[in-house]
Image (cartoon, rainbow, N blue to C red):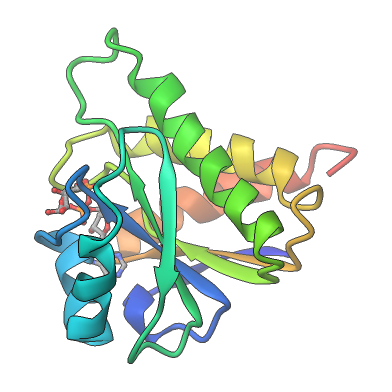
Length: 172
Ligand code: AR6
């Protein structure tokens, strides 16, 4: 099932939480900073061995002090007006995470709103892409639960509205 939750992603008890990272994978602000703080220094140490991650791709590490076994780091696009392939890159992030979930037999995953903070992607457009890719792909990835973890009420309402609309469509 797919659901929307309001709160801090670092507190969730799921197989993997997704980090909206930058291409260095060496930490930053926003959800990235929160995840590194909650996971502890082991996470940064493992990230240092990875050698970064290009925009639109994803890399997996352990969860260290988090309740989740894994962290999947993905690098969303910086919003530059919408004509620099941002939508394709954002969709690619969600797909890359689903692929890793399948590969590592992860049954539940939580996503933040990738690119919607510091990277400036308009939330409604980003949420539509997230929902489109995930509703189409999560069963094939053998996921049982997907959580869209929203940090504020406005974002949670946006996601819930879109999710309700998607779930009314047949075949999902
Ligand atoms: N739990 C869930 N969502 C959160 C949390 C949290 N603890 N904290 C923030 N958010 P952002 P980006 C929401 O800026 O736009 C970092 O410096 C936030 O409200 O974290 O992809 C990286 O290192 C927003 O809706 O990620 C990169 O340099 C969403 O998470 C850059 O920011 C994403 O906001 C990536 O920017």
